[in-house]
Length: 246
Ligand SMILES: [Zn+2]
Image (cartoon, rainbow, N blue to C red; front, side, top):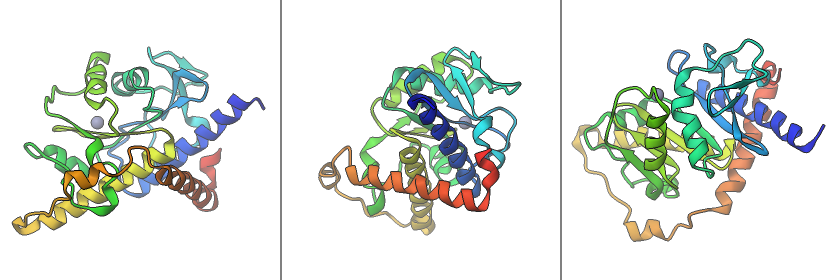
């Protein structure tokens, strides 16, 4: 197998695994929302989950290769929902650092997006690496049904890792599926703890911004941890739900 083919096969496995892992956390709503990753060696193409499937039934071979204009490659009868080309494709096209793009309506992060002026409070040690890399969309404009909306979201996201979309939900990007998935889990944990800590009207402690600025932007330890994390996810699912490899 050629190197790019091997990398694509691994991306299929990791994307299907990420979807199943997110399903275990209760992050899916209906059969909606997408996880996507740039095809290795072909940044003009993305690998994405097909329309009408639960994440819990994702299989490596079901992931669809699609061009940013909506053209599908070897889809074998599978389709991809329109909003994937209105949110994910423009972000892949305009932001090369967004190798993996994950969007969910996971409950606690979405609850923060629903608050007027909602903000992820910089109050939790384990999330210090991304507090200053969160962008906010304060201009909700209905469902994303045109690529122009995705282009607007890409401009808002810029070189940040997380976009909190008002009245909608979060979008998380990473340099790999493992990095994006780990960040997604941390974000939901952080928002859940924030909501718990604020219960009863308590004011949160805030980590000083100069202390957060001392955290390097590209943490090698996070990259190594994310690599180990996605390997553990794949290993666990290979044992407990081996059909995802099919
Ligand atoms: Zn959505």
